Amino acid sequence: MSSLLIDNIGELSLCDDEFTVLTDAAVLAEDGRIAWVGPASQAPVADERVDAEGAAVVPGFVDTHSHLVFTGDRSAEFAARMAGRPYTAGGIATTMERVRAADDAELSANVSHLVRQMRSQGTTTVEIKSGYGLTVADEARALRIASEFTDETTYLGGHIVPPGEDADEYTALVAGPMLEACAPHAKWADVFCERGAFDVDQSRTILAAAADVGLGLRVHGNQLGHGPGVGLAVELGAASVDHCTYLSSEDVDALAGGDTVATLLPGVEFSTRSPYPDAARLLEAGVTVALASDCNPGSCFSSSMPLMIALAVREMGMTVAQALWSATAGGARALRRDDVGRVAVGCRADLVVLDAPSHVHLAYRPGVPLVRRVIGGSGLE
Ligand code: NIG
Ligand code: FE
Image 1: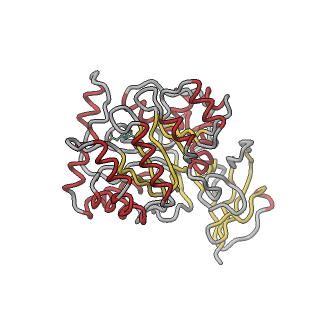
Image 2 (image 1 turned 120 degrees about the vertical axis):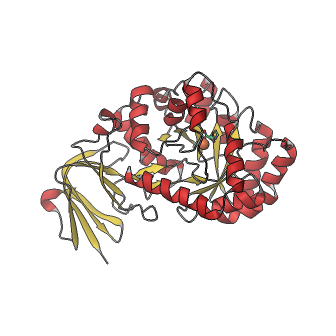
Image 3 (image 1 turned 90 degrees about the vertical axis):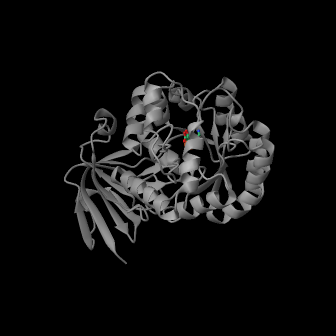
């Protein structure tokens, strides 16, 4: 057994449901799990010691939404949007062409690069989706590559209907042979349920087939306008519905009454110049909210969870404590996990030592590299 003491922590955010913050604390990890949390003055002896030098420590971020298996640059699309062009999901087909033409090594190198970038910004758990291959072989390959980096892999054959293909025939492929080839490499299935992608019946067909083979469900919903995505996610008991930019009061009530997490992706609103979702409205209604990056080459090419926290606080009505909770414990809920996203005995010892005296600096000092040291997050090194 190996033990590690993180000592001399000025401020420790536990990210429990009460947002408890301890001062002058220490954490003992044994074999990668938290074995003790308490006052630094009572810290036990360990094989190794990390001196936090009075800095703040938070749980590693749990980024539950990313599309990292891609290649190619779409910065011109971003520039065009900033010059006034609206975001459409049409760019997904551009990346699809590039991914189909790429070899495995190129795709794997891109994932590796982005996962390291995430970890250096404090992310210790990451979900990775397929969705830019959109053939049986290319989707299965994307998931095989993603699973080299994380267990949280998501089958997104239902991202868009590839240009020129029939929507119902493609839906049958996604819910049939493509699912069969991908399921062994995936933990989750996701569908882009949105006008221009998959309608509610097509989405239900895909998600029901995925649930039948044992995959957990996630939904991209209500990103570009009001629609049925949130309702469908709650109806099917999905772990999470992501984006939630346009919500009716029925959507909010459904989320409050169900057990689907609302995952907000403020980097998308930033990068597409769209209105931000109203997180305060969701929290007041009792909805569990997570924050994630949606790192992808189109709608948000940011891998930074600290940026998402800052945007959530500044633009979505969250307090800093709520945003930090949503980026850690909220993410864990969206993955239906209780071993990450919190500082508690038994959880994985995934911790971030900040170059700051308080977690508030994550929003107070936007754009500043505040991650001094990342502990844990195995697989993301
Ligand atoms: O989550 N909404 C659909 N999919 C991605 C965008 C992917 C892209 O533009 O390449 C998203 O925003
Ligand atoms: Fe997405």
